[in-house]
Length: 504
Image 1 (cartoon, rainbow, N blue to C red):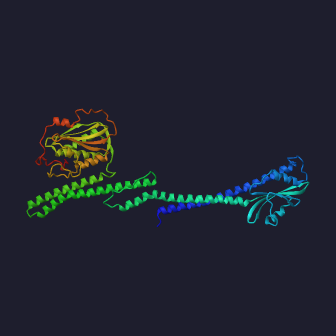
Image 2: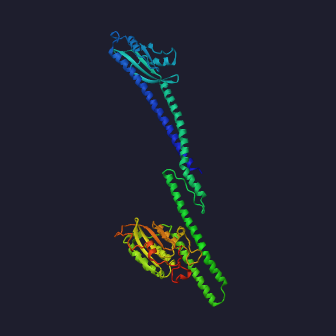
Image 3: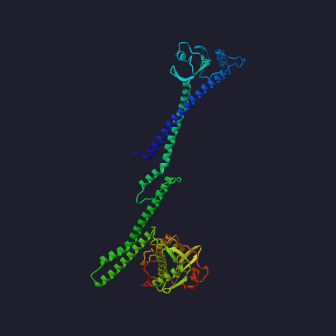
């Protein structure tokens, strides 16, 4: 199988060779035609000068009329004109040779050939082949009173003109061959350079495995090949993301499901015949299976968040949305749920996903505040973006822990086992990122925490909201006004509290 480079190069070579041959043939034809035209023009010029001398009928030097003295007329013409280097003139009077610039030797083929032109009655132009060489011949008779007194014959070596053309065409052909060779060499190099991304693509595709998708093709220029390379790299990015998501899902699922599976298996193996023990074991198994189901649902949600169809966007009124979040959050635990502020503005987003993110933040706050603790929910416009926030008066988060609370399975309870899998804040971050925004936290140990969803703003608010307005609960205000409560212990968890684990 021939390579694309060989096929392209073969096509270029055929095109260049064909164009070179055609150009050379056309050049030879053009130069030959011009040479013959020059010969014709020279013969016409000589004929014209001789005719002017005949029509004048006088010797330009003495003024004497020629009359029937053709010899004197020929002598004057030959004296006043000089033939070109490839041209010779011959004159005949009464059929006999008179004067010639280069007379032919007696008995030669040329002398015998010209014998028939010594007494022509009319002007004749012909091409005579003498000793293998073509000669253009023009015979002009000099007539007086209807009688031919003499003949003027002009010969031009037409073959010499053609030989000169052939030499010029030969030189041009040599130059064309050199140019052709250089063009083929350049075409070979250029096709190699142009097709190098395709070779890189082949090499990259051959080295890619399901465990290594890191290689990329170097993109040079902005032509079709560069577009192909960029498209291929983008495809590898998507594949790497998809494989990474798949590996993360498998790894996360295996990591988190291993513990409940072990618990279920252990209790089933040790389960005795006592009805009470069986009931307790089955209740524990059911609880672990329910936790496994929630973990799988959360992992599937995180995997789906990386796809383009994750969101179903629609206009959302922030003030009504905050009220809806507050109404649902009150069922998460016995806390003092308040609306810290609701700005009248509209954004475009997925109401269900944003509701899920805000309820995760609310559940997160509920699990890290004691019964009766204060949790505020609100919205605001700041720095050209819409912000949805949840603030609590819990134990707060240290600066070093704030760097990893949004990672999957991150827990900051320092070994204390809880019912969650550590995926709540990772889901919040995935939803914020899918909306083109982000999530941040503002907290200090002992002073509560405020989580903020930063979202792109579509419309300006109907009313300007002052950052210092009392409806916006700032972390500092919470630290001044909310009572400092002791950190939550395991015994503080209400049985009706949400089962999702806080990531702090």
